Image (spheres, rainbow, N blue to C red):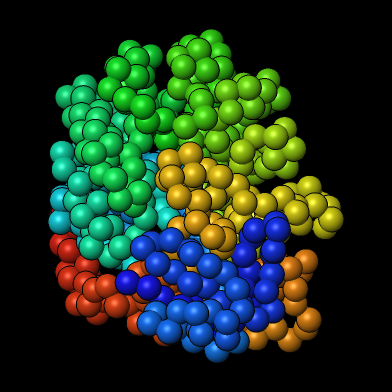
Length: 443
Ligand SMILES: [Zn+2]
């Protein structure tokens, strides 16, 4: 199957040719085979299915490096007696309360709802951090089945924790290990697994050593120093800061995702840098939980590979992009900062992070890259070129601008219609599942 996507303004993220005012892509066997002029490529590939961008923007699919499918059914939920005073109360009263009640069907429908939202927002690759202590075994496989059915690229893990006792911790490690092994046999380049860890303060040294034995070649995906209490707990129980402890236990490394890193110092940044550990910033979540502001610019300037995620707050990466842009100006009282770093995080670093797992180049339009392409309905009111396109995206677009989502050369959404599934039916079923879950939580 081959597609020709043309008659659009092409933003490539390829330094050798960042922008084509009028361009076309030829997609075949899941890859971008050629980038060029619409007329020429239409003449060269007359058999390919023609997708007319009608002058709109053609871009690489977006990548989310930290999401939480399991949190989907929290939308609109009110938990009886829930009155959090701080981040620890939010975790226990909201997120752990939900994840303890999830069954496998809830995981499946949370995955449908979340992945559909990602596709609608032009996100073609999702790194998810999953928890469902009500149904651990098979939960990653249930989510992966949905990802396969919808045709989205995803890297999954289960967040191991001691919070529900030893038996459940071991079951969570076994789920990660089984999933990592299954992914190793899957050569689609659509699915990978990691060893998920909740956060240092819910994991003993013994548990972390146990995880290391079962992780295979995969890296870890862990929340790091998100709240100040994580640091205080680490100092009290282990006499060292969170990143120092993770370093000592060999958790850091080029395949490990350290999420948040809000409360880290210079020495800890040095350890992240020297181990080539990846860090992901989630601005909206950090603000919503009132846990503080990540030293994003310092981490970036240290040369640490820093990406952008959403932490389950939204599936719209452009929303996260907008908030990251203003958060650090606001925090530092300096309107001149973060202009270059935030676009680099979303458009370059998220692709570099994804490509530590996925083999085909992602987040870029060039010959040989994965055919993950979106079309965005945006008619620039001022001149646009390769040099100022990030500003056009920042101030002129959002996730709803996306009209077409193509993943691995397959049209998943066209003219805002999901082609891969019956969306209305899935949403109706998801509402039923969510209502039943809410009843179990409050019942
Ligand atoms: Zn998270």
